[in-house]
Amino acid sequence: MGIEGRTGASARARRVVYALVAGAAVVALAFALTSPLIDAQVYRGGVEVWLSGQDVYRASIPTSGVNLPFTYPPFAMFPLLVLFTPPLYVGAALLTLLGVAALFAACLLVARRLDVDPGRALLVAAGATLVGTLSEPLRGTLQFGQINLLLLGLVAVDCLSKNPRWPRGVLIGVAAAIKLTPAGFLLFFAARRQWRPVFAGIASFAVCTGLAWAVMPSGSTDFWFRAVLDPSRVGGLAYAGNQSLRGVLERFDLPGSTGKLLWLVLAAVVVVVAALVAHRTREDEHGEVTAWFAVAAAALLISPVSWDHHWVYAVPFVLALGYWAAAHRQRLWAPVLAGALFLFGLHWLLPREQERERQWALWQHLPGDSFVLVALVGLGVAFVMAHRRRPASRPAVGENPEPALTAP
Image (cartoon, one colour):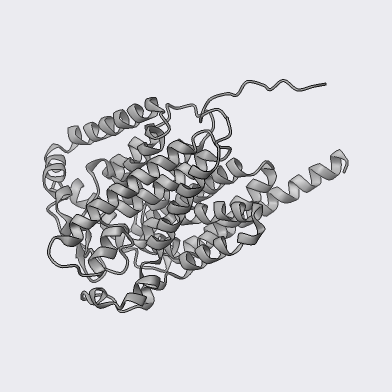
């Protein structure tokens, strides 16, 4: 193909990418702007309470049909102030568009790590972004008006960018200051013996938290010494939407403190397994992607509450599974099955609310806990594969490889 042909093909590919991402934005806006946006109502209500000089962590914020508490760390008030000082649906539209951009960025970073063809990676990422907006975690995020996609973008860019211009780890610290769960991604660096990003993440978290403390000292004291320790503020642990290990054990309705103790043991095992996967794959060809998903799975699994709309990492995960299946054609069922489970959200088809999840039959836990099961199976497979193969030598994230010497 001549230069003109390649240029024309490249232009057509770019138009396809623009169309796919624009389509994702349209679908996302349709989900968001036709929904009550309950979490966005909490964000806007929290901003209004704070601006009125009241303690946001003592307020009961009215939303559509129910009053809810503000559960985010104080630093979250700064981005929410920017987004939700305007009218609710204006802020929600802006949050939605930023979320689509963050999802596309995360998918593109994963695809570029796995694909030797940059143009194809761009197309795959755009397609995954469009299809991903239809998945249950994305629908929930968009319909609630959640900030999950922005956090996904921050941790993906921090962990998977090549040679970033900022100190790696800083964005994880910022994300953790907005919502605590992303702090778990420091394990991505710690397990790979990259200590500078760990310290940078801790420092940026401390700076953000300190800034919030300076601006709202009483609210910060209330959050860090009371509200963050109160699990009742985030909802019922046994609720079907809680796709975490703690949620699964609560739905089994184990006697006394058995469930909590078992959760602590399983959480420790999951963290160790994820750390071993990240450590073992640190020199593998696609080790960064494997490690990132192992840590993401661990963070979601061990959190006491991981609502199904927190599982936005499922979209780039299924994309990565697709690349893996393409290299092992006999395993095409893996991304299809995982994609279907994340697409339909089978837990909503079962008896729920008013603690009815505690009466599920054993078979109902298979569809009812499907997100958790996918993560556990994926983590287990990654662990086995990481310890079976001999790692191929390659530079760590952010390092520049020396050019290889080849025969003329």
